[in-house]
Amino acid sequence: MFIGEYSHNLDDKGRVSLPAKFRLELSEGAVVTRGLDNCLFLYTKIEWEKLAEKLASLPFSQANSRAFSRLMLAGAMDVEMDKQGRVVLPEYLRQFAGLKKTVIIAGLYSRMEIWDEENWKNYKTKTEAESGDIAEKMAELGV
Image 1 (tube, rainbow, N blue to C red):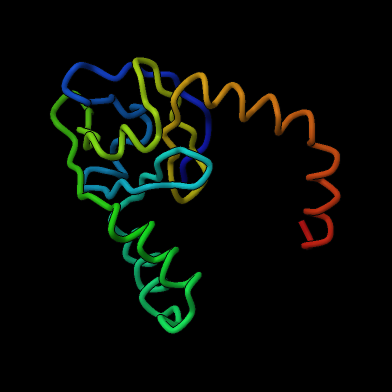
Image 2: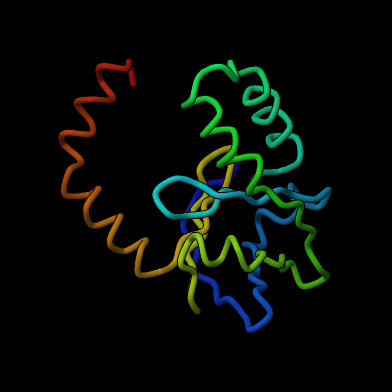
């Protein structure tokens, strides 16, 4: 389970250190892909396979299904940690998420999100301001 918020630096080669407490779960490899809200999603291989199966089962006759599958699957890349616990984020994904020097890695149970620090601050400020409305919507979903 991934939880918490961590600040790490992106080096000149596009490498970022993953939080030490997450590394064991990622020792068999991981997949990084385009996320939503201008961030990247990072999954363990097992979680990625579950998601990929769901995406593959979506009806390809529906435009939204095709678009979402393309976003997630075509943008995906296998990544492996080096001995220092770093992964290389491909250039096209760094550009997609607008990653600069400092990134925030947010643990979201079955995945991690990788955000540019400034984008994360802006997103978090906006979301915190709307937390009452969000809580009401979640109550409608039974949360």
